[in-house]
Each structure stands twice: as structure tokens, then as C-alpha cells.
Image 1 (cartoon, rainbow, N blue to C red):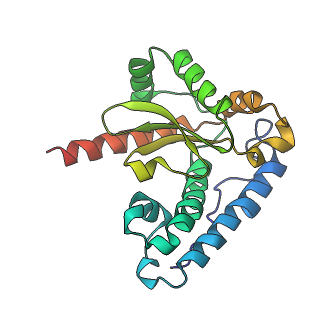
Image 2: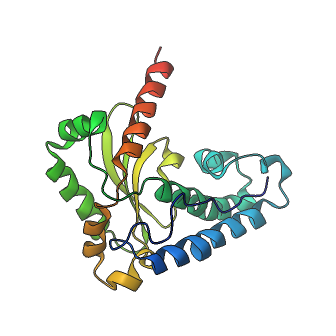
Amino acid sequence: MSHKLPELGYDYDALEPHIDARTMTIHHSKHHQAYINKLNAALENNPELHDKSAEELISDLSAIPESIRGAVRNHGGGTANHTFFWSIMKKDVKISGSIEEAINKSFGSFDAFKEKFSTTAGTFFGSGWAWLVTDGTKLEIIGTPNQDSPLSNGLTPLIALDVWEHAYYLKYQNMRPDYVEAFFNVINWDKVNELFTAANKQQAVSTK
């Protein structure tokens, strides 16, 4: 299987004014495509891995031949992380449902969650990602460097924010905190709630 650039599911200007169309165009069609191209190149001589998704590859890096493990970690991570990032964004979706209850329980309030997530994203040193994840029983906010994914540590992503400079520099320049604040206007809470519900069901099945 040759990995291909996924469709966004919305127009490049759909997240304006919070995330601008030019950034989305370059980010999706150039940066994401580059990770996919390099992942395909890394897998070219390993046909036994051709049927695995990027998510499957990075979920079990120990099964990847050592000679390409670094490339798969970086470019498989970049492929999977961006695909996930696009999927959890939509303008003007209000938080509700079980994810709202879980956030209030885990962090004390939505405002406390937002502050902690914003601090993780806004102060992360270098390039990387901020995440809301679950292990099936509890929520956690984490940062990962470069293109590392929570999937590699057995965690389920619920929210991802790309804090590489290419994700925001055209509009926000060096003001990463402004970009982080804007991101809260484009979180698709319906999708996040769906992911959270599915993770809970999976955990319930695995513990039976």
C-alpha cells in the first residue's frame, strides 16, 4: 500500500480567521505530503509493511526493522499526526457530552483544562505537539517532540495541536500563544467526544 495524502474534508479557508487559508494550503499540500513521500520511500524495500497504516506502524515501532525505524518514527509520525490534526478541527462547535464531564472531573473545570493545555502548547520548547490523550481510564495533557505520537506509548489521542512553526508562522509569527488561543475556536468537540466514547468502549471490552 502506498500512503496517500488524505482529503481535509473541508476547504482550506474553512477555519478562517483563526487558521488562515494560506497556512492550511501549504501545511496540508506541502508539509503533510512531504512526510507521506518520505514514509513511502522508507517502506519501499519492506513489502511486509506495505499493508500497515501509518497509525499501525508507529503503534509498534519495535516491530519495524532497525534500519528504517527512525524514518518510520519521524515520517510515519508526521503522516499520522497530521491526518489526526485535520480530523479534529471545525469552527464553532461547543463542547458537550461525556468529554465535557470527563474534562471537568479530570481538571476541575474547562477553564483549568484550557489553561493547562495552553501552557503545554505555548511553552513547549522547540518543535512538537500538544495532546489531550486517554489510556481508556483517565485524561492527560502531554507534549511530544518532533513528530512523536502518543500511539507509540499506547495512548489514544483525543486532541492534537501542531506547534511546529510552519503551523502558525505566516499568520501569528512568533506569537505562539495567540495561535494556541485561536485553536480553541476550531476544536471539533463532536469528533473529540466520539473519540473519547470509542476509547471508553474499547477499554471496557479489553478489561472483560
